[in-house]
Length: 168
Image (cartoon, rainbow, N blue to C red; front, side, top):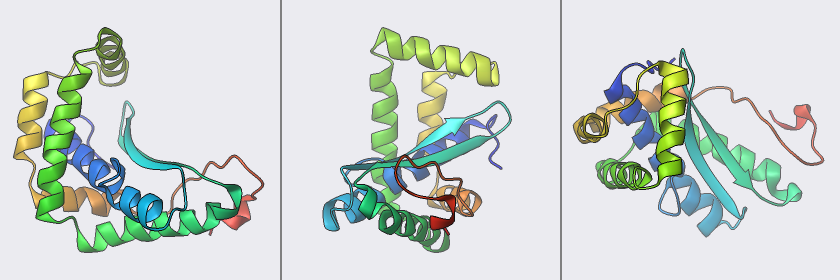
């Protein structure tokens, strides 16, 4: 698992998630949405729990493109684990993650949601300066290690005319 109490590990996970599916410039956004046009949206995000960190990929698409997109998402997660991120990806994601986090502190509802989530999940509220410092301290190797940890058999939730057996 991923140590959810370590701020640098949390920051490395945020950078990994951003590189994988943090928007149009991410691997999933570029390949699945822009290049192949398989979906309306695709993104990855991290989901904190009290004893572990996790990540998920979500996509909005037509049912007849679901399995193709699923296979490609699995391939891209595996590829990122085997090859690791590029230095350019890590640098781009550092700016994106830190900027998004700081912008989230400008909205009262977002601040309240983050504080409540942090309090109930980890019983600690994230210090903004400490988190942005942790993001800055993350290395290419740190993100590559996270990529190794999150690969593997995914859990799948699908709304549409598919069976569990469709997802190999």
